[in-house]
Image (tube, rainbow, N blue to C red; front, side, top):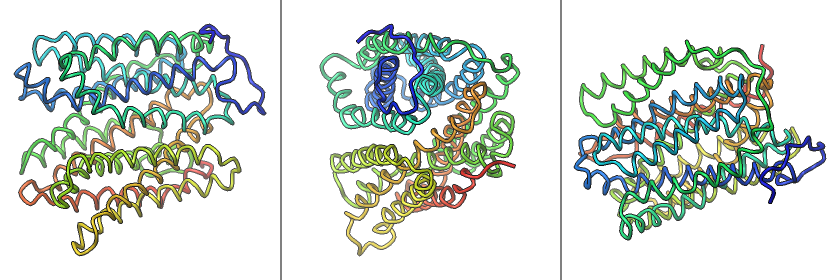
Length: 453
């Protein structure tokens, strides 16, 4: 494979995603997404051992919250940088921050140093998430975007299946530091594959960099951090943290997201809102499903892990299905159908919790439906966003899409923390919240397919 393949303009009838001129970029993107996915899953698996080794249990939650907060800033910066300077420079910045964070965490001598490394990782992943969508989206012709985003979804499956076991093995055999250092070793390989093609995309023609937006990104990251922190507290303190975080996130969202997003205006604003709703639905349900299966249904951790993996597999299957649907009329029906299937799947997951006489295997059946439904609809939002965005706005709009994901998911997880009662270990209210979010997405999704006014 020639890593320096020039970017060529492929004819519309070219249906090969890995055609000459874009094969290196596509392989590099898959490698990078898989690497980011493994890092997220492996670190979550290894963090208890890390905190114990560094004596940093008081900073345990901050090690996750720091990445969330800085990723919001990274998304905002990347959106403007892609539109003005092109995805290549944004990718360089993201890779440098991500690699520096991995090395700092891998060689950390204290939990404070590790948290700083995690913050750099979050900044890098925020930048890379936007740059990947914009850069590869410009290299790959628009008719192949459904296949491209299905490929991105599939890149999460293998890390989701093998990540926990591999991370546990690294910690046991080589020590926790290699969870970070092994990923760091893979960064140059992914960069060598992807960067040459992105360099040939060129600079953007968007507006001059608006650094004033950075203060709104900082405000949004503070709000996201407070929403995340609300789930770690109890009583009145949790309510106060949640309320303060929600206000900060809402004020920042009005400045950072397209006008009309919060009221589901037709077209692009609804696309951005839908991404937040369905991501929040899945994140809140996935976080508490293992508790339902192990604490209430009596399943083993292994069985709960298999259930979660099943959802990841059906998500990939759903993504592959939507990539094969070519007719516009069929794709219009597929978007709300995917959201509705996700809501129905969550209702089935809830059924044994609400009615103990029902068999608990219904939860597994429901979760496979959730994964399939989100797989059908989630990639279509990315396709729609690029379709509705002029080239000079693709970076800013992709940034908005991922900001919506982060902010609404933070609010949902914070709300889930308030709804969950540790004393009774009752997960049903959290699942009801997740189901309501998916149902709301199904109801408003037709507005994404209508021209804005």
